[in-house]
Image (tube, rainbow over all chains, first blue to last red; front, side, top):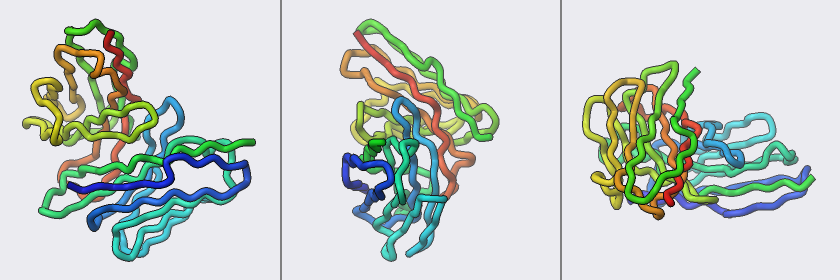
Length: 115
Length: 118
């Protein structure tokens, strides 16, 4: 079945440093989504990427979708303590015609930011 | 908008008992709901996809007789953990999509239910 690998598993940064998490799928994706889960909370949708090579920005966050639609990255510029949490990528594959919205989540990257 | 609630938020039960968890879409109709299980510091593992008015689709390795899912209305899906055992202790999270069959809709997650089986 489809597998989505995410690295690194953990990332500790000093406040103000940049942070990047990478996501790779074993199959071509129809789209990829990113979620953030704060400690003790539930995942919250950040963004969805659909097009090959797509780049989207949300303030200090930059999301990229690879040309082959098999990898993606999330980059945070100048991290802040409010960025702490686990960042998940989640891929959707429409192969075989299944289009009910099933997402395969990566393992997540736990980000800690030291003030 | 697009708020999903879960009840209870936390439950402690004895081994052998059954526990029902409710997932509700508060301000929209969700024809498709998803149930996930999450272990500490781990990813979300999809257990099953629940479609209103039909049987749930379970992921490989998930026992359908153990984890009973009912999606009787467009705003409510329930997960019942039958004859719970300590290894069933976990964080259970539901999510809902705005419409079934859509490729690109995001999923709105409930706050989760922490189940502890003694």
